[in-house]
Length: 310
Length: 293
Image (cartoon, rainbow over all chains, first blue to last red; front, side):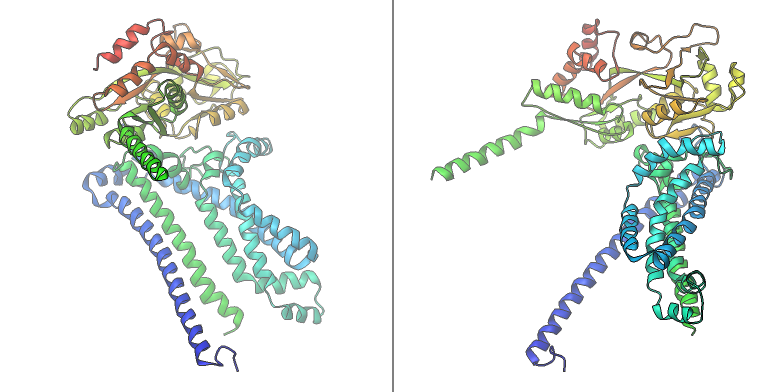
């Protein structure tokens, strides 16, 4: 018999504590939910004038999908296409580097590294995840940019490639940490069964552990992707911030976040420019929503079912 | 009893301070370019007049102007002249024209890499570089290399000034790379042999200040204290104090002091230039401020 249910008094106290704790947790959850909701509400409210205020609409909409970002001008042009291209360009470069590096490093740490080494690697990489991005940006601006220019012979010293590589530094630790957790939590029985069938360590790691941890790794990659899209300071310092619509990796790029970061400080409240910056915020929000939805529904609905075999 | 009395006295003193403070506090907001200068002024002014408080905040010229309009600042520091729209808003809200007081001068200098051999650029060449009509150093008589063009982000007062004075209101070319702050531009230019950039007066290794001529044929003028303070250097600007209301005696005393020889020598120490030549015309500077009384 459970000791809490041994006497009615203790039983009642346990129930009361349960009630109180449930109340506290519900309140906290509601508070954080309402914070997010209020931030959303604010962003949407400030952005809505782009569509619902006749004057602003006239100023913004004709040029919104053009390739000219020239908001401080006699005829302001609010083309967000170069900003979208810049964001995708830097993010894709970052992901191409960060996903393989992060996942393979996690695979090594989880499946091959001796325990003492794992005890060192994990905390060190987790420390890296909290590394201030402004320091990474600084490093990119002073060291990486020059090195990559000599390597690629790029015309522009600050370009999307420098930004992308620097962003990957901030995304790798996130992907690594989550992928490593996923890989370590694959049940040992599966691996032992694999060894039992005569598979080598490599075969087990690649064909058994890695696929089994796939949902977690996918989630880590998506989180890394989210971080790369939202990264502001690094791109502000390292990409050159020229709003040009080009897919060339060694051209300068300007991202959505860098645009908000650079221009929010001095826009006049209620100006079309101000509203457009909030619209960019909404675009970023929708991006995050999309990513999280993919993670939630795809992983939960598809992958989990596949691996559970139901 | 003694303790009670002393605490009552303390309360009274605190109350005295708290009701005395508002009219002796001067709130200054605005340009980030001018924050260091404003704070230096405030620090020395407060050491001279200990019963007065001068608070200086940055945030950008635009923020300062908004604060002036919203009555959350007594003085706005601005590194650019107010736009007609902003002047209009002050007129609507305060029923009078804004008071504009130039308090210092700042030269916008053109940086190139120290290995750049070109002796001078004219304002029109500069305009063509920044609007994208000249994209190669060959057109200016150097190697066949693309010009790497750096500028400030469009929230900067320097950006607006450069756009108005050098580009004559034209738009910057899309490939102009924008960096946060003068230091970033200086650093970039020192590392890019084929780069050009603009910003506040700054000295650094690896860069050279390009002499600028007003027209293609006139003589080039180097940027230095004398040419900028006298206004012969083609790209120099005023730094302003803006007031939306008549200055009260406290603010007036501060304004007079800012235009005094002592305060103007601080301007030079901060890397800017005294307004009106080299402080010799101190009296005329004083009359500029008193004409608003």
